[in-house]
Image (spheres, rainbow, N blue to C red):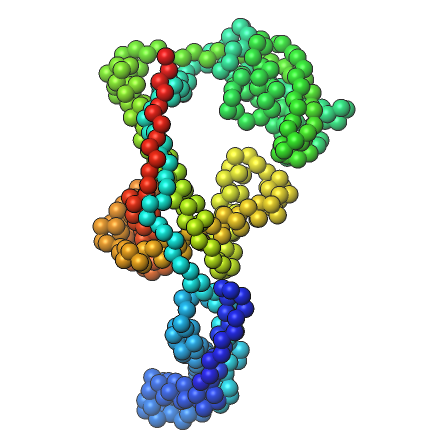
Length: 442
């Protein structure tokens, strides 16, 4: 058996394993013996049927099994014993494998390049305060009250926060906006829709949302919307549209009274306890956000500290994952598939860069984990299983049974645990810049 190695790129190699006709025949002979022992052929005792009859009756199965054995041997002798770390088998060409003939199997593989670890102790991390400010607490309280507000039909002019039933039609010159962007109806025309007057967060035409403030039922007006140069959909970018706007009904936003019934419904005794609860929730959210931000800082430090080529198959696979998640999120937010398709090239380039950095950071963290001898303990698995069960709403015992049948999933969990513990170690060893104190309002 002969093994040849060819460099395709800095991270990709081709390993060709060649078997002589005699070696292939040897595999076939062993296989034939096994089939003869197991075959049940009328008129013959086990192992006594003629070779030709066994080959004829089990030709398809023997051909499949011969290929599997030769390929497995080629992998064992060519890939498994290679003096480099295999990242992924990209392709395999096994050709035709026939007894008595030479067989050639070529594996195209991506490898993990050798690189020197950067100094990873004392990486700089800028801390952020997790304390809830008075402004944040007040804003959260307002959001809570708004969620429980009632909207009553009113004859008054709409104030910010009131809901207005309205209709509108937009034009750019003499051309209807609806004809320019038929898939984005909110920018064209609406016969009847509800908008929150003056909302800072609501999607839609900003000029209409702001223009509804001060309008009564039955009022009409024209509002002008100047779309920015980078606006999506592109056909509206840099254009100025005029909208004919009619208010049909105003519903006044009436906040709930903060009385005993209100506090009881929230399981607090009074306003002081409610504000304390809100501050605690805000603090917990900020702690999680800050933890993620610190991990990102560590990741960026590592990426900037060392340079090495990243396996292309990893980038390709991760790019697909990044793009899939991005498109799903945007379509859920109302972005049309056509708009995403128009920017396919730029989106792919951005996803590819993100994928490159993800794979690179994982390779660095994995090498640090090996050096630090970080291991996965039973309690690590138990903790991860409980978290996944809570997130998916599954019974933990059922999840464990599923995992026992899926080794790949277990391996992925193991890898994520190791990467997480390694990141925790780097954060523990990081050099921290204290957060600035939260400024309280007067």
